[in-house]
Length: 416
Ligand code: SUG
Image (tube, rainbow, N blue to C red; front, top):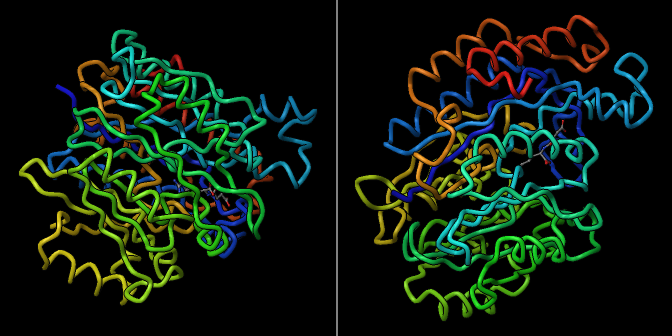
């Protein structure tokens, strides 16, 4: 049976704050702070447990090999002699933000009746640009069943692609044919536009989408300048509901009209600036919530603690769930370690609408497997990483061994 599975990126043992993402305010603010990889990863596991507790299907992806020796080799250096401008990028645990791993089009939208995934090239930020080869390998393993899935290589780096974080799907239900919305940034402005329309167009072609059921929407320049480096910082969709800030899109009227024409059941919940300013929305990550359909019916938002701590946001949410709208429940999770690098609950997961039976079971989570993963994390993930620790060979070893042990315990040695 087709259903939504959320695959969370397990937060890797090299999680650190290096201030690598221009335009991501949290990354800049926390640059060079001490990170806590063990707590970070356990927070991620707790989020998965929480969602399993709600009755949702949960999967995971494992951390990528760090430091990335192959990438350093391509740059003519090694971990020993890497320049200071390169070293932190080779250690980044940024693959934890699985919403940037790939763009996913569920089978009902694709003309060959398979679910298509295109790995994101992430070419705008150097530390993310070397994720894709290992992500590609992992996705090809998890979604190896060619009857159900097709995994594509990334769009060439001429055009920036950041995956599902800039992609939304509106459909009467997960299993119905949907309309896919590709949100792109226009050139210019204070910060880089990380998603290019040409990349989105290529993904739509790879996925064999019906050209009459695709929409391209420009991200508001104002939103990018305020720190919305991905669309999922200011908008989220689930089944027939779009939940977005008033300032998310350059031309919202055009988008809403097209959506209402294509999916008459659509419900648009727009948050006005006079209730929640763009700054509060971005600071709190209100829209980086996971908007999910609950097994008992109705929708819920899985929000970061920071949303509850932002008065305008919490007031808005309490009024919203007291009303008659489609979003009826609020759940709060603690993912502060990831949030400090600009990654909320929704960044940490890749949504795949598919039959779980078609997925390699090694990537499907249950309580028991999460216990096992937590055990490895508690024993082997570094407790803290300060910027100067990236120079310490003992840390390099610890990080590599911790990952390898996890892969062994999960029977995923192919990925070592
Ligand atoms: O790409 N942060 C990530 C956050 C990604 C969030 N994902 C979504 N919005 N879907 C980024 O900017 C910071 C790394 C550092 O500074 O050490 C970082 O890569």
